[in-house]
Image (spheres, helix red, strand yellow):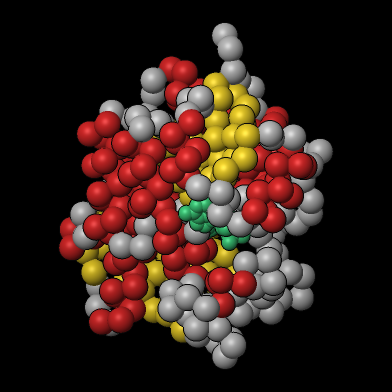
Length: 343
Ligand code: NAD
């Protein structure tokens, strides 16, 4: 079977990881790239040996010659680019956050459905191998029936030097980071019905909130806490680890700093090292995220080939994005917000 041909739009900070992922992927390769900034286009084109280069997405699609597009731009351009891809009948991956608003996200899902093309949101955190190890343990029944969980990401890592736009947006940590933790909460505990959120800005040099705490009511009756901070100065910086606490009827699961997965029940007390692989192109401490990029991109190829809906399809990710919107509304209005208000 011949390789699927991909095009990538947006050759910025994070796209380099995606380009490495495509180079390693089985059954796909990137044949064209696009960025409106010619300097970034040149850096990525030269590093990955891609000859077809465009500064306009319209020109890229007009020339065609690819089977899918990977949109790695920031959020403002997601809707126009996804709709452009749908008009050309091209299966599309779009980076998180899905869109500036819920209405935009719904319109993007509708456009791809009308064109009958798959849409996957690049929601990679649930593809991190430590998170998948925790999910497998929960699904095996090791701790019995889950009734409570916590998904936690607390750090003081300087994310602003690599991504300066994060310091200037009115929205920051919920839209950029909690979005991943909220998706992990859905992945582990099921869809949520309601959220109660509190936010705070600690760093005076940024525009948005850098601390957020969310209480989620899941449909199956599980309660979870999702808490994220970029203002938490710890003795050993945990970035970019997501930590988990899960309580079940038979025992407990903890994913703690240093990638230790502890499962405790009456018949078992086991601590496993679930540190992700350090891929040849990866760098510490980013290797956890970098491995998940490779895994979600391989999943996309497998889904395209088999005609299966990707796990983080646009349709699925509306639930995660609704949690983001509901969290902001809950914090602003100091009340519990039901997701129905957005879905
Ligand atoms: P960036 O600003 O470094 O890169 C974005 C690039 O897109 C820029 O080079 C810009 O010129 C280009 N661009 C923007 N609009 C365009 C358009 N219409 N046509 C062509 N090129 C266009 O941003 P980044 O930090 O790489 O983030 C990109 C996206 O990736 C964001 O949505 C961010 O939230 C997401 N991200 C995801 C993860 C993850 O783990 N999934 C991590 C970091 C960033």
